[in-house]
Length: 336
Length: 167
Ligand SMILES: Cc1cc2nc3c(=O)[nH]c(=O)nc-3n(C[C@H](O)[C@H](O)[C@H](O)COP(=O)(O)OP(=O)(O)OC[C@H]3O[C@@H](n4cnc5c(N)ncnc54)[C@H](O)[C@@H]3O)c2cc1C
Ligand code: SF4
Ligand code: FES
Ligand code: FES
Image (cartoon, each protein chain N blue to C red):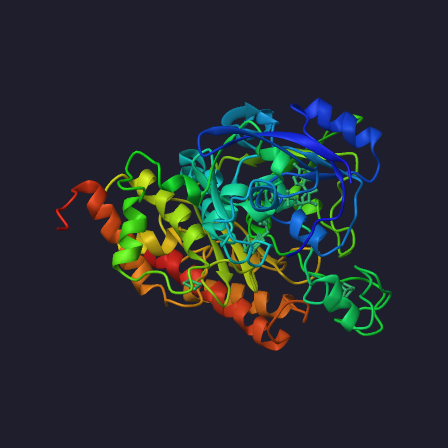
């Protein structure tokens, strides 16, 4: 039995009321599906006096295609469950890699509860912190992210490097999504690629008084192939140990057509997802060109430096980042 | 510890209970309402022993705040026996679990039944073994090795599609 700490619960019914509650109750935390925050509170990683539940905020649950600033976008409310995101016809048609990632989170039960907004704001994870308080005490009193002042992953380190472990985040970055926030000063829009920081204690630019209201994902304007690769030991329930999102925009609708733009993003490294750089050599090469796969995989292997913040040896995970990238590209090519 | 009055709908009935605001639905079910069919296993989302249905969808009661379930239709394993498909107080799934020996210690069984029932209702026809595997992917069983559980769920879906005479 893992008891929650004592707190009050507010059940506002719209976004304005959530913002007012956040403003008036410093230290209060948002609970959406509860599948991340409640285990963390049961482990005493925080003891907020109040939880603000989004359970009754139905305005956060729409999915709609619309014109925005001269381009077509799909707006996905932060309160949609991952089950809905993975099954929604619009998402499946326009952003298949997002539907895949949402459908690979945890288990069907957790996807029925967990929301996209909670997935984007999922706390960073580490094998030394996502444990009971009793377990952490046995280590000698926790680390920077819990009760202590040391880091067990990087001995002597003064910066927490707990892993950004969300399945949807690398995909949202690869798709050029924007995160829409509501706060006391009104609405603010942050590109998903700029939302995360390399600090495991506070890994997003979201202010405590803000909530994520929706994700705005631009509709592709060229033919596209996209994929999400995840490695876990079990095929269900587990957080990713390797997580790579890939997006290739093509000159025409064939894997033999030249790539006009590409974005590759890796998660489960440190607190910030990594957008793979130096892929310019790939532009103009057909997706089916084996040289393309070699260049992308080499860049992934070089730039992804996993840490021992999650299970498995870092050098092994580093190789697996390459392997899973290679397989994902091969599958895209095979699918035509 | 301040207690708040909760009004819940459980297995088709309105129920009222006083419980601390930070209690989970699982704690209220087990320690206020004596509905101890839903099991408290890991208590943190890993095992599925606490699975109940909220508005027809299987979810984890250990990660649901009781107050957030107010106004929604909660269904626990205790309610399966008086569903319309049940006969002699037994849902076809429960009957199939019995006939296939799909429960050993039985700790996972209530949660598995609630996940499986949601699958049968959603699919509305005879289910495939892979559909069962996927639907039960959040429910751990440490005894059976799953084979008989899958056998039983497929059998129950056949019984629901075309009841056969078992005499
Ligand atoms: C056993 C288990 C396995 C899991 N496996 C995976 C996995 O494989 N992949 C994965 O990505 N996740 C996994 N998770 C984590 C979690 O289930 C998902 O990330 C889920 O999407 C979280 O959503 P939620 O609505 O439940 O978030 P909550 O727990 O409600 O919230 C998570 C955090 O986000 C904040 N928050 C929530 N909504 C908003 C909002 N609208 N605006 C601002 N802040 C907000 C909360 O304050 C909290 O800090 C797993 C969890 C468990 C228990
Ligand atoms: S990375 Fe270091 S400081 Fe951060 S949670 Fe892990 S052990 Fe703690
Ligand atoms: S008790 Fe709820 S998932 Fe294990
Ligand atoms: S029968 Fe014992 S855990 Fe499933």
